[in-house]
Amino acid sequence: MRSSASSSSLLHAAEAENRFVSRRLLLSRGLRAFADGYVSLLLPIYLLSLGLSPFHVGVLATATLLGSGVLTLGVGFYAHRFKYRTLLLAAAALTVATGVGFATITDFWPLLCIALVGTANPSRGDASVFLPLEHAVLSGHVDDAERTAAFARYSLVGSLVGAFGSLAAGAPDLLVAKAGVDPKGALQAMFFLYAAIGASAALVYTTLPKEGHAARRRAAPLKKSKSMVYKLAALFSLDAFSGGLILDSMVVLWLYQKFELSTAVAGTIFLWAGILSAISYPIAVRIARRFGLVNTMVFTHMPSSAFLILVPFMPTLGWAIAMLLARSALSQMDVPTRTSYVMAIVPPEERPAAASVTTVPRTLASAAGPLVAGYLLAISSFGVPLIVAGCLKITYDFMLLFTCRNVKPPEELT
Image 1 (spheres, rainbow, N blue to C red):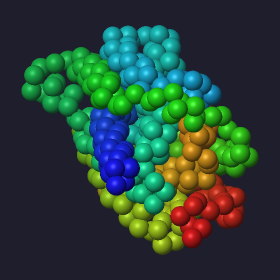
Image 2 (image 1 turned 180 degrees about the horizontal axis):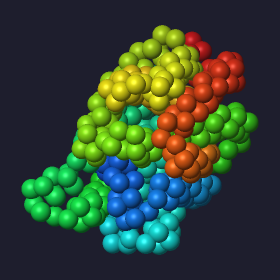
Image 3 (image 1 turned 180 degrees about the vertical axis):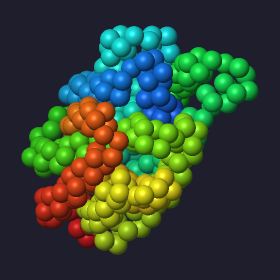
């Protein structure tokens, strides 16, 4: 009887800790998403206000992704030697330094260095060192049946809060109009806010429980799942390169060039895009339970890419926005399902490495996208990057369906 009561008490304690950790991670994800939401829109406008060209904007966006990729790769190789909380706190400190750096330095070459080593994100989606760390921690605190739903909640918070972060991109205009702040100073204030949000995330991470030595021993480099993880990493890289062509910063730059769209209006557009994406996450969970993770990834992604291809051909701004919003309603359903799939098909001890290896090539591949997009937008405002991105994404979908057709997650084997 005493043994049964003791086991029940331990079970309840473990469940309580799992809920606590999940909530902490959702809070940190929300904080970072809000900052990324407005920085991704203000970054190109801020850089242009410093006198930089669209090509330079693309170079800096590429640098942010390239630097994040290298840092995340290092985490993938060495995360098993450190406590996750320690690494997350270090990443939060880097966020603070990034915000202060962008707010106080205005020359291209120093900004390039900050972009390389910092955490600035040119897109509302998470493309930073936080991603594999939080994914590994979250997957270790849920069971197989709840894994996809947990990642859907994680993605929903990121998308929804990031959408409201996009709306905050209009704050500099308000500061200029209501408080008489000069435009450059108003934009710099938003980067100081970015630093403050990084400090807030650090406070959240300090509340995470410390991992014991046993937990650290469970982490290991890729072995059993190496072949499949490398295949997925290659496929995800193709998708990421095409995504790099249409980062929020690049789409804002195109809208700014073609339609002279203000940051306030752009923020409203991306607010609704984020809301539509957020609504799609719980829907993706239901679809995945019925049709499978891979089928959900592929057959929601294809029509979203078709909408993307149509955007440059729209005759008016209203129709272009309609196509972008239609794409947003479908394009992110593969995010929680993709993450859940990767975490499901690898052994638990290899999840940190798998998260990093599938994230880093995505980040590195996407780093080339803004550079190419910036060049294309510098010579034409038609929107060629959107067409190329849509075609590449459809190619990726067909290849993913073929590669994963016989590799099922545990919940789909029963």
